[in-house]
Length: 295
Image (tube, rainbow, N blue to C red):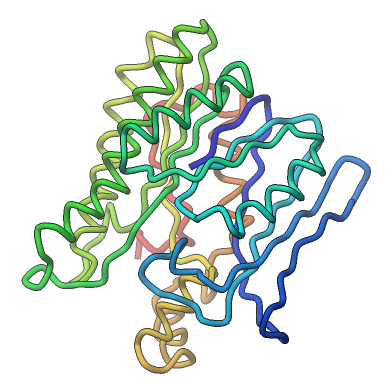
């Protein structure tokens, strides 16, 4: 869950990182350019992020940050790696970054996180609802509890954060932008991922309704629907098939472009929706899927 103060979006993504030492922790800050900073950190417990496909080798979390902006990241990760990562982030941005561990499906925690963010930033320009949970189970084997959990994280949390952030924007007379993460699974079906399909379809429909509701207040609401993107979660899903290489090959055969999407390509699409360049775009579900849904 990302909140942004000021004009640009930084997109934080995750890379696979193989540990060479049992207790190795990677975290560092490096100036790539005068106004561009790279920040990194690593964690062995990817399950806290991906929650379905644990990656035992650990991952590194990387952000490319443009100076003169302020940002808040809310996630369900515990404070151990978060503290290390955001100590570097705060150092790089001179205290202008804020990290808030938060169970996005808990409305009380969500409200507290939003209030803390506003206290730190003053107001909210951009809200990005991208917290997500997947469950690879067919319809007949998915329990009520499992179904509800996925919807609580993927759909209900997006509703709650959108509503409360919009209230704050209106109260501060500072109309902003909200970008929700939908998915190609909102538009296609499969025998598994029943709860995920339902939740992302709900996000797509909710985005259109929220765009109409908040338009009179000057708040733009849109969604991004990423296709299969080369992330640690994708590789973990391939390993879940029993053979990572064959799993990745099977995923790749479904891609019309013959390749997977890259995180930075999704980031640029989000940046467009969050920018003034999309000033005439309301209620869109932008498909960034390499043509997957048109084949």
